[in-house]
Length: 194
View: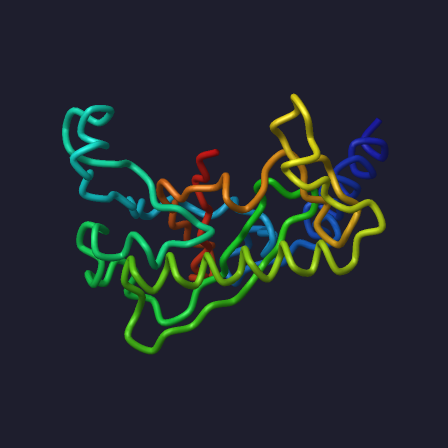
């Protein structure tokens, strides 16, 4: 009986020392996946616009709670606190997973940290890159909007990212969750409205 307990203990200890593939062990002994967003939530960055006269009829408080991803430059003059440094870290990992079947992960850098304006422009640039790579690599192409009939949503394509459901023009950025891994890496998770 003691031998069986000893063997079970050895098996359990060895399992604890060998994390699943893709995980890293930090100096503190925690396991963490760099492409996962299991870090601790350390902040949330909101992207809000001053509503136009017409938008105030919809948004009573005069605030539009998102900015367009396809063409944010048109809205930069209305972006509230656009130049405020909202992320002091000079480096972060941007995770884009909507509306993608396969995540896109980018390391972004800015020596003085990031303002809202910098972040939305970088995110827009990366989304445009993703949609272009998808279109270039897919054998099942996106059906043009004017040929979809009653179907408003974008069909799923089979490129690198497997984009489904939405054209880039459908996407708006509401906020970013800022997460910190046990080893201090910063990860950005996007709250995308569509």
